[in-house]
Image 1 (cartoon, protein in one colour):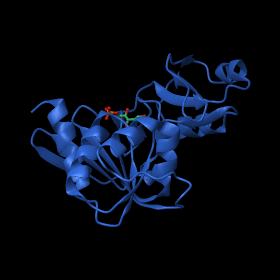
Image 2 (cartoon, helix red, strand yellow):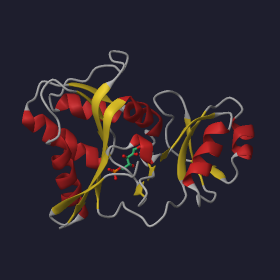
Image 3 (cartoon, protein in one colour):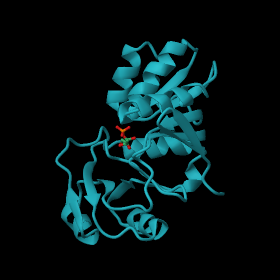
Length: 214
Ligand code: 5RP
């Protein structure tokens, strides 16, 4: 079974966790695109929040009700993809530059469920780590974050500049703390295991369920 079929399988497994009346956070990316289809097919009464304009547009086109995230202060469930999944549950997100909103949505959810194909688990987290930076003082922020490169993509919907930290990530917790503590960093793409409820990884025609320790 190919990677696209695995993405669909993981997405369908996550869609099965959604119940009528839930407030659901919708992630961003190609795995989430399968989730949107699977969710729409269930015709549930849901109130959804989207982590990007592209997800919002796709969800609405499929008939899902998307509301602004000013409408809720918590979500029942958020479902999203990932770029890297470490054995201890650390994630890298932001390949689609949506990590700032994705982290806010994940943190607001009672359960944050990650969906992935079998190419996403890694032995250890490797750079690059996506960043969203303020434009104000950008050269100074980039200097403080060396080695970091700007990504040639549009600004985030919140006006942030997208970049990638290319330094060592031997200790994800220490790197996350350093990135978060650097003035000018809006958000970074390291997501701690404490944020994650479960990870659904499709391998061939089976879905493996991983629960991060703690
Ligand atoms: C977007 C993300 C995505 O969830 C991540 O890049 C995985 O994408 P895909 O499902 O297309 O592999 O973090 O910012």
